[in-house]
Length: 401
Image 1: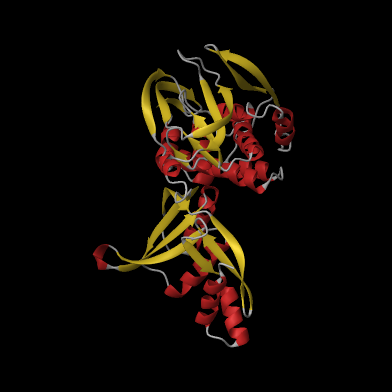
Image 2: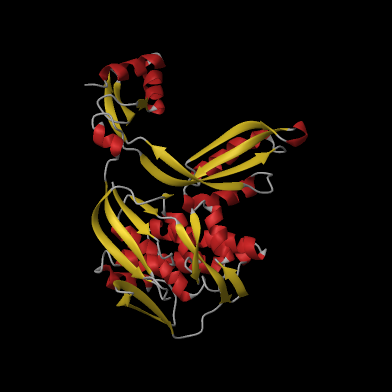
């Protein structure tokens, strides 16, 4: 598995994440500028330059604002990004970052998410940082993204909201919402920005020490602040090596696949049960990875149903809106989750009545799980008037052929 790992020893900001990835693929600078110009943004000039940070050479991005910029809310930013006709990956991941920012700002300032005033993060440079990160990440075409824990500075910062404590309230709200590990430092200054935290929250499957890697390339992204140490973020691109178990048991060790997710839950005690079928259909059609209902008992001994939705990070806000719109709940809980999966493949297996699609999970020849496609089996059983169990038995008999 080819992965990208962010070493955030000095912190993380949107421009540092972008330039660390771009440093892995310098030929992408010109293409990036052309892609970003698809958005209807004016009054800026974008440039890249190599700089020295305490003896380390790194790529730095500068956005020169040449004209006044309007105050933007989430709907305006959404319209800007959607108008550019980016790929689905870039559009959805960029909007997911702004949704994470809107949620944090709304909580901090006590306003609805769609009325959050994006000051610093609604400016041209932040939009370029966030969308640029997704454009470069898509170009790198890695299978997984991970990062280290985040170091937090201290002190005070002047913002459009006034003087605020560091780490910024929106930054720590994002870190809390997405379960990102962090630790305090003695640094006087902002080491992790809200946009940096939100980008990592959306694209990273886990935050942990650097795993065993066969390194292919290293990118260096420079921040604009100067500290006693190099203010540089490093991006490691490499191939994940098997762990100790895999090294000692090559025939039996299983490489598991991971995928970041979000778990949305709501306890509901006053909904017409007939409506649940419609609600589940709406959520699944909107991209939910899974939806399920669990009978529970709430306060005052009320019987109720817990509605749970497993979602991709970039889909969580949209699916949460469906829960609020289609059910009687007044809110929902959201927590970070991770799907851990066996590697899988799909195979066509012959039966006396035709071919059936079968999902195989795990390592052959003795797969851990074998799951025939139920609809294929049911169609055969009905068409040829044979017991459904006979179709399944035929699949097992012919699986090794």
